Image (cartoon, rainbow, N blue to C red; front, side, top):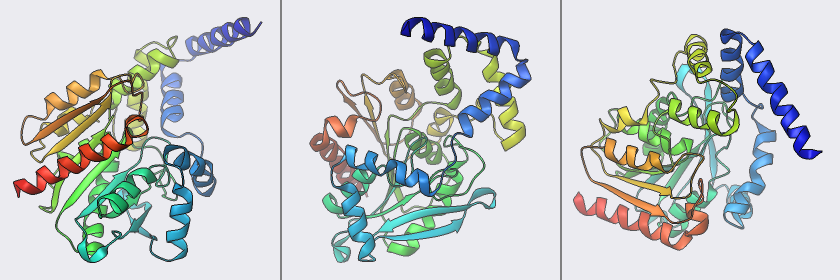
Length: 322
């Protein structure tokens, strides 16, 4: 009975999709992908357990530093005049801070989820850290998920904010999943000299490639043409289309060092994206680390010691190039 119900449901959805006009289907897909469940306080509470599942004790660590007023909040006016939020925390030994990291979260997440990276940079590497909520996530405003493409403009606003707070001249941008794509997309734009390097973990090569993979996995009954319609709807509503939002195009313009990380069992952002991304970066130093058996965004969870070592070694190499 369960299999029959699943088949019936899939068939019903397929028939509904076919019944929709191309325009209506495009509107539905654009809204479904870019305007899911509302964000805010409930979203933060929803994801607290996720932070602890990725690294036990993260919420207690966060709450204790917040109570001591060591970990602080800030809000700025971001791209398209939406208010965007971030937290920041100084290095464990501020007088001997080794630099500043900006940590960028993934799709549907928020600043809370990737506390394992914040803790790695602060407690293990003695870095200052700023970790924002991207638009339409966490406490930030926004009218849709920007898939990294417009998010890069907000990151480019956070960069001088972090520099003004911490007053050091070595900055790394580190993102996971959509955050990894955001970092790659940011890397191709003109940036201050104190932005020295990037770490991208399982980011996608382009929005259209990612959405098409999602379509094949979960919405196989929807024809590829619907993505074209959804892209046109997104362009009209939000000013950008799926084909232009490319990590590859931005990587081609990047000449600063980058570490690429990807699990070879990742099928959500397929492992094949790693080589595309790596090959697209033609200029400047680059490294690749493949994590055996790791699925999407699992590289740290499966290899925490090795993850820290790879990132630490990469940062040391970048500093030696100065």
